[in-house]
Length: 554
Image (tube, rainbow, N blue to C red; front, top):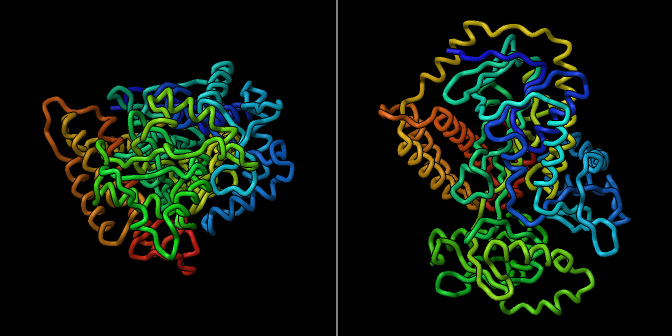
């Protein structure tokens, strides 16, 4: 039963950096816009969720490194992608990063400044130039200025909504269904923009908020949109206790010591090819995420294997410490990337309850961003006319690896492009009511789920995350991927049965379905890519294979 019918020109799903930028751009084109979000507008989702002391916003404006240029930026993006990015979209990011930064500054965003009054910056993951403009307190300030501008303009918002399925007519997107407080609502519109983030809550060890559950990927796939690059999941070392926080690449410049639960070194047991443990650890200074492109790969492989099969620390991770580091000597180095960032980093960890000078910390491998998603063109439009995507929900500007600081700028660049294109398309289409047949299809989809208890849904999530950590996080192989796909089928069968007297909220069940769908996409893509490239590592196919120099699409 549809309890609420709405109409708008452009429906934006999500409320993070990409969604809010898309909504502003669409409104600037004269469109009526509705933002639908599971959480509070501009106060939920991945952009708002701080897992680091700073956020990086890549801008090749030469303000930090005078030798930088958009051409240099483009080259870095494509080098990191290893043939897996759409060169058109990468070029757009490189060329439009500067106006994206300027737009945010006009809204009031303040980038951190160095002692000389210039922009504070550092060389982010996989970059050859120092172009990352620093946003303190991660990206909360960025999303704040966008949220305030949305409110100032009076753009319509709707919180507490879980979008379930798209409405398609003659192969074009014409709206969407959603759930709010157990009630079904329908939105007829000219265009839909999916900007609802990634899916790292698929993993028990993740750096994301609980409301990021692969909704965009699953919704788009159910509608028949092309999905690409899902095997490229960014993961890396993070603080495991007392809070979760990623371990920035600058910190590895200090070459910290890593030991297992017995206080023993263990990484040396996993390094190959004449590489030493110290060389592997030092190489991590080039990038936070795991990548097979250099010898730093052995750090995450060793940590993950020691946690699963060795002697983990008290809370299931391994230990890391700086107790033997000569920081005075380290900071005296002319090109130290850590020196300018250390005060912010040290204070952040101190606030989390850790003194990096004096204490061991417990670390583990954590899933972060997904480099794949809904395949889009230069306007953010998917293979389904009228359906757009931006931010982590979209694929194309990134590849096997992604530059640190590039997701934030991509959200702004393609949020704007998707918003403008969606508005122009919507203004040329008339809005029509949702049909009875469309309503029946949505009701049949909702009726296919069982009535599971809260305990039942929690158990499915626990099993799913445990299985994802084992089969998809860092180390993969064909046998484990096959077992994982069987586990997904079993969990999905449970999701569609059950007769609890007090069932869990329907939104919880729908999120689990989306996570299962996303896990299947990642595993299918990882199984098909019988090589190791960037963030994708197959233990049974450990080398890069030129025959797989193309995107895998679903």
